[in-house]
Image (cartoon, rainbow, N blue to C red; front, side, top):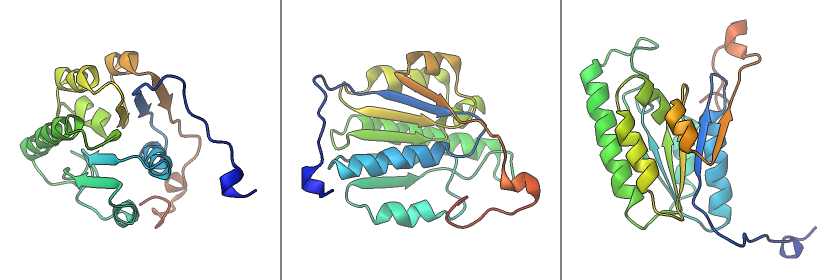
Amino acid sequence: MEEEKLQRLEPKKKVGLVVVITGHGKGKTTSALGMALRAVGHGMRVCIIHFMKGDMYSGEIDGVKRLAPNIELHLTGKGFCGLYGNTYPYEEHRANAQEAIRLAKEKLFSGNFDILILDEINNALKLRLVDLPQMLELIENKPPLMHLILTGRDAHPEVIERAHTASEVREIKHAYRQGIEPQKGIDY
């Protein structure tokens, strides 16, 4: 079917959604990136702030750059605090997460974006790198038509309660548990 003949839907009432993607399975960030790709297809502008990632290369970094200027990416983290041999002290992780919160507020109220993705913010909250009141303030004060996507394991019940949509990604099976190391383009 030719693209110009495809039916295009438009909601009767536009609402800025709060979406939470959590769980211990693989695919939370990938799901958020899929929404970003879809949004760019609609001519929307997206800002992605990585709260935990930032110390290791992932293909999404250069993939997102190819979608510029519709997507802006910020790597604010120092990796996963306390995991995978990460040697940065807790205080440095906390300082970076606090800077990411400041940046999130700036982007939230800039008027430049339709979607703000806070990747791994649920982990940052669980690890006390950010505080629950800070996260709730972002949710409660977001512009009415902006979509806010919050990813990461262990989403706080109060965050889930305030979300319009919450999904849990559950691991059924993972190649890593079979001794297969992470694969380029799939895992990073």
